[in-house]
Image (cartoon, rainbow, N blue to C red; front, side):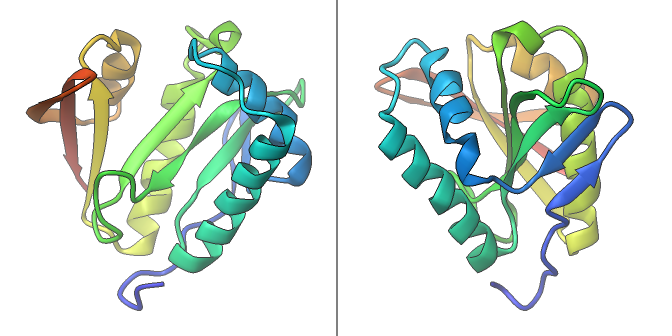
Length: 167
């Protein structure tokens, strides 16, 4: 972990949500969530390895994606957090993905707002988010939490929009 930054809080509670570190038992939920992308679901073993890697990377880097569970229901609805992704440890990306059944309730905005506070607490000064041009729901969340479009790049999957927020 870079000494310049403190580790982010890996347990965050908001009004309606609990955000926390991945557990091995989250592999089955993660597998279902990936399946909603319209791609082949990973095997349970592959999902398990991915969940373990999320935990290991969090301990190495001090930042992580966190699971999102609704407080009252206790159900897993997605994830949100900070990743290096296409960016850097100094200026990480915020990322989120929720089950389609959880869309439209403000959960992504609530979770992402909490993650921004966690990023500020680490001492970071800027966050990025990369979003495919077709993903209007993600753009709406980013707008609500203060991100602005910065630039676009194009690759084999089309336009990728870089969004930025100074903290």
